[in-house]
Amino acid sequence: MSVSAASKPCPFCAPPADQILIEGDEVRVLWDTHPVSPGHVLVVPRRHVGSFFESTATEREEMLRLADEAHRIIAEKHAPDGFNLGINDGPAAGQSVPHLHLHMIPRYRGDVPDPRGGVRWIIAERAKYWSKP
Image (cartoon, one colour):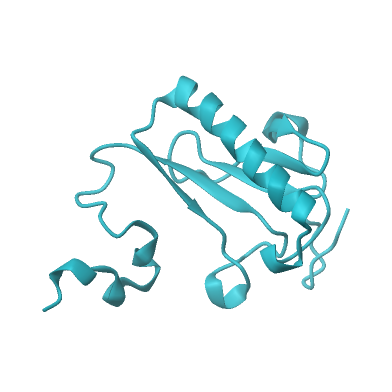
């Protein structure tokens, strides 16, 4: 099990069995332990790698393949109206666990008053570009 700079065990290197939705050769899909919405999962390489840009082509390919598989499962179980997909790469981008993970966040009509802009809201003052002159 990998250890972060703060000497905490990495929660993605040896997740509990009940957190695992899908297992591949290089990647796992995990239920998020603090979900933003029903069906929120994380697509995580098995290898402890911090950045998307340090991952291998094989890991990236399997991340996308398993994201497709997770999408089918989540759609059947939760029937979301859309998804946000995102990677926080580095502390400045909000990455709190230094192990690469792709968030798949199901979205539902009415979960927020105006969903336009999606992931652009990470920098709120720049998100609403459609109302600028």
